[in-house]
Length: 300
Image (cartoon, rainbow, N blue to C red; front, side, top):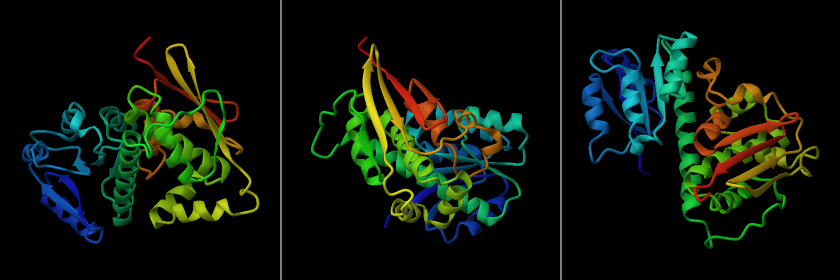
């Protein structure tokens, strides 16, 4: 099994040692650097292939924010998640990091469980987004015509994996749309139809029981007949996706942006990432069980 490679950058050798100790049982290959300029040289080397970067904010020579901005300025690093570890946790400082592209945060000092949880979450998010992108580029059986204006039912995570490549293929850049569409459809199942709460998901992800719990709830009498729907339509120069679930809805307003108060949680980024990276516009309707996301077309 190939180990996932993680670049760790912190100017304090003791902090590097602590991170290595905390992550010793996670099966990761850690490449640790106390010199941020040397770390940048390693990241940009032709043979470098990292799944995650753990980055200290305050460093001499090249601080974490500037390191991050350099990363996000190069397309080849766009899919690599960054965990910013910092003692600078005031809301305005967190906002600066979020704006630069640090969607995962740790406040020093932290417990081993906090580091392990956020690392697992960042790697899992990256894996799911990369899988969605790959399937969008390689739909099974080739492209399949998906009827416009028809509500397509989906119930399980497998249904999402089957439908997303076909729907994303309708858009100019399927690999960009697929991760966001997958996030929204999975939310419709887990949070909408099955009632998994924000905190429950965080715990399930930490325990590695999220998919098991989804399967268990799908079989419960109160949930087993529920389904969600996805519909696409061309409206002028846009492709519009409408996703509807049968849940009670939620307060969606606080999830459209990256919230500094939730930057330290292992989950809760999917909607904001979908809005920022996958769609031209995204809005929830009514009580929050309907989401409408659109993609601008390039041909008119």
